[in-house]
Image (cartoon, rainbow, N blue to C red; front, side, top):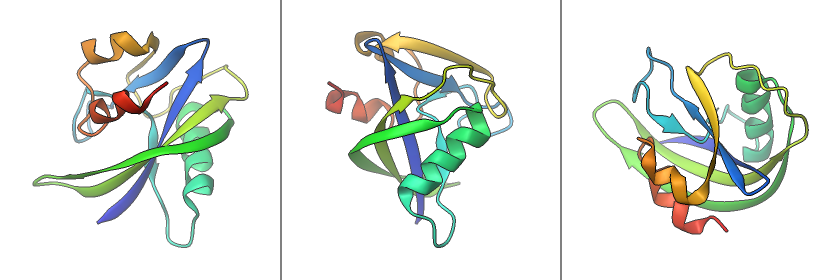
Length: 124
């Protein structure tokens, strides 16, 4: 099983979601961005690194929300979700197709990656 971290970035009662790359597993699904935890990395360090690499922003991690396991024919992961704030908002996508800021009640209108839809109930 691979550990993955995901940033649930909240700003003005909206949440940031990004559309997965067309070349990746779950192409075009929406997700809370993040990525794999490298060997000897803390979850927090990995999350800050991944968000900086994928979105070109820095984040403040407020707290861990929950974890979700997902296994299918291609992946076996445990995703660790963290509530975060963007320290700057000049987002430049390097991995994703699109991005949106959406209200919690609208998140279920998007085709979210497995696991991501399950954590909406934990959001304030």
